[in-house]
Length: 255
Image (cartoon, rainbow, N blue to C red; front, side, top):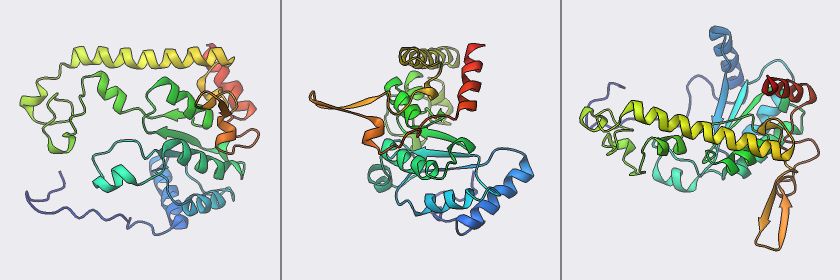
């Protein structure tokens, strides 16, 4: 695909040529938005917080900004990183997301952009926690792949996936029946959605995005429980939608 001969190394620098810092990145974001008319955002795992603090400070001026921020937890999977990075670099989702969300919340910007969570969030309890921390959407990959037959053989990058899911090899791909697997994936997604709506109803809200960080407790053994807000240092109102957005999403679910 990249036009690199077999056996030759692919140089993939960890830097961009279109921008060199947060300020020039925002210029590039605005250029992409103007040229395409589409939402433009950033996706990142989280380590040091200087980037996010500078991004939030520049966005607080109101003249430039990203439309969405996707936070990927270090527990997520990828075939596009060195093993050291995949195993040991980046904060777990809950810690990384809460730090980034708090940076924007301090400046009152959380209703101005969409927060997306990623990193083993395809189970209902993990999804609910992500929404309570302030995520507006979640990305699901691993669990959806498991629903269509992934056995986690960890051969995605070799083009030799034995189940035919992560390969372009015609002989291996024949093992994947699209009609059957489509039904399985749909059942998984409907079940995940149903479970989230049920727990939202139990909390007393119409949508999981309306669950707050005070609605969920983290247990420490069988002798102590602390709310998400307490564990991750959330202030009053953090993780919650503004009143007009909450009313919009409630009306949408009602229809």
